[in-house]
Image (cartoon, rainbow, N blue to C red; front, side, top):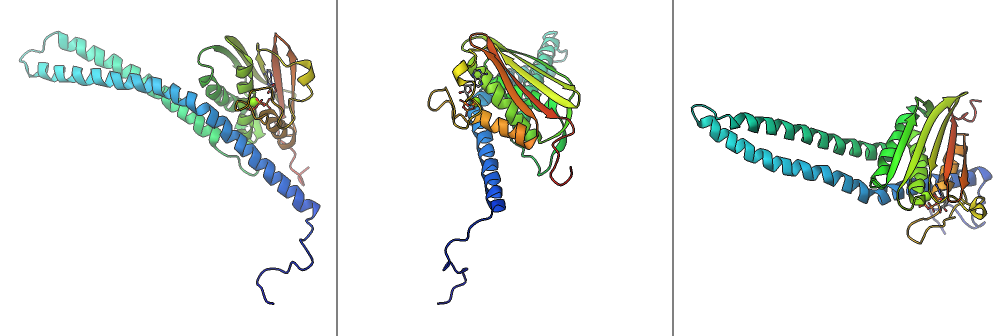
Length: 277
Ligand SMILES: Nc1ncnc2c1ncn2[C@@H]1O[C@H](COP(=O)(O)OP(=O)(O)OP(=O)(O)O)[C@@H](O)[C@H]1O
Ligand SMILES: [Mg+2]
C-alpha cells in the first residue's frame, strides 16, 4: 500500500511537552482574542448610540444651514443686502462650530474602537499606559449612559508592554465596575509610576464581592451574573495577561455594600523575555 501521508501504523505520535505547551499557549491566545472581541461586541450597541446622537445633530444642523444658505443667496441678489443677512451668517457660523464638535466626538470614539481592536506584536513595545487606560475609559463609559461619574487621575506611565492586551485588562475591570453599580455611582481611576512599577487602581462604589466569592473571581468560568450577561472569563484572562504576559500583579480589595478596588501593577521596563535575562 502506498500513500503520501505519513504512516500511522505505530499509532498517533506522542507529542512532546514542548509541543503541548505551545498548543496551550496558542489556545490561551485565541481565548483572549475571543474575550476581546466579545467585550467589544457587547459595547457596540452603546458605541453606536453614542455616535448616533452627534450624527443626528449634524443632520439637523445641515438642514437649517441649507435653508439659511438659500435665503442668503436670494438676499445677495438684492441691490443692498438686508441686515438680516448678517444674522444668518452668524447662525451658520455657530452651526458649523457645533458640527465640528459633534464630528470630533464621533471621530474620537471611532479612534478608541480602532485602538482597542488593534493587535499586539510578538514582543512588548513602548507605550503610554495612560493613553491605553484613557482609551478603555472612553469605551467603557459609553455603556454607563451618564449614570456613573468617572474621576480619572492618570499620571504619565511609559511602559514596555503589550498595549492592546493591557487595554483589554482595563476594559474588563471597568465593565465589571459598571455592572457592580446598580443605579448611580462613581468610579475612580488612578495611574502612577513608583519604584519602576506602573500602578493602576480602579475603585467603584458598587455592591462589593461577597467573602465566599473572593477566592473564585479569577477562576475561568466563575460568574455571579445571569446567563447571557457574564461568561466568567474576563478576570481569568486579565490575570493571565498581567501576571504571565507582563510578570505583573493583579489583586483587589472589596467590602460588601461599600465597593471594590482592583489594582494592576506592571514593571515599567517590561517583562523579562526568556533567553534575555
Ligand atoms: N468590581 C466588582 N464588583 C463586584 N463584583 C465583581 C467586580 N469585579 C468582578 N466581580 C465578580 O467577579 C466575577 C468574575 O468576573 P469576570 O469579569 O471574570 O466575569 P463576569 O464579569 O462574570 O463575566 P465576563 O467578564 O466574562 O462577561 C463576577 O461575576 C463578579 O461576581
Ligand atoms: Mg467581567
